[in-house]
Image 1: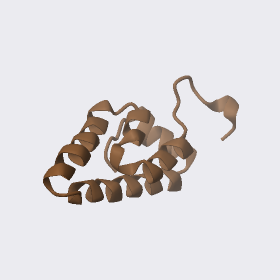
Image 2: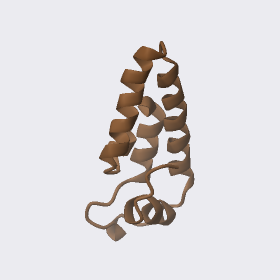
Image 3: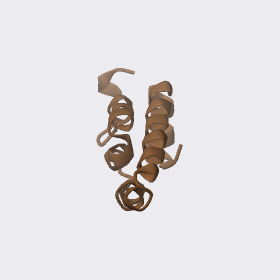
Length: 92
């Protein structure tokens, strides 16, 4: 849990969680974790789907991003690192 234990390129779970909570529908938390394809999916659904559905798709993506942010914050540092950085679990 100490800062000296972090590996080069390690991602901060608090930063990822807060990005998921506050910038949820834009998928910035996915880009932060290195999941560019998934971040692009967030953006495409939010922008493209939002236009087609008058914002309903954006609302759904906001809820999903918010939930992911909460999930990131509730994991231990080790579990977050193992699940999202090492094993590259990109969804939930």
